Length: 119
Image 1 (tube, one colour):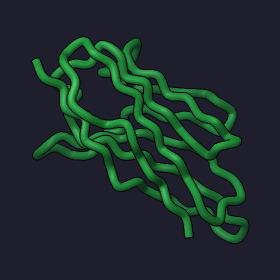
Image 2 (cartoon, one colour; image 1 turned 30 degrees about the horizontal axis):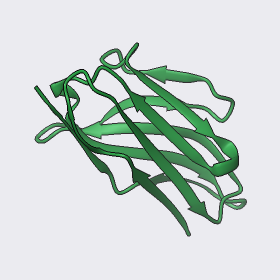
Image 3 (tube, helix red, strand yellow; image 1 turned 30 degrees about the vertical axis):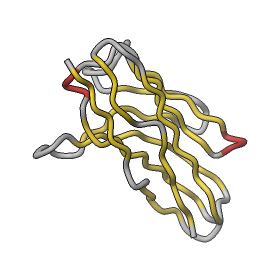
């Protein structure tokens, strides 16, 4: 059994910052890519950014220069530092991880955390 638990969402004014965390726990052999997605009301879930096990990152154009993904492999945790937040960043943010459990590799999702940016 593997669980991803997110934390750190909330309400912030435009221009502010938030830091999201996502911790993976359970029967984990190795975590490959860790990703952040977001879904605004009435819209599809979109990729915000990714980080490989080696630390390489990529970001959606809409967040480049404002958001930073990092990970602590010893803690099986991925972070999303969000700076200069805009109202259009309002969404439920989900973490996702590709996890090797020794006999199989699967995709896992967190429960989501709400981020609301007021203008």
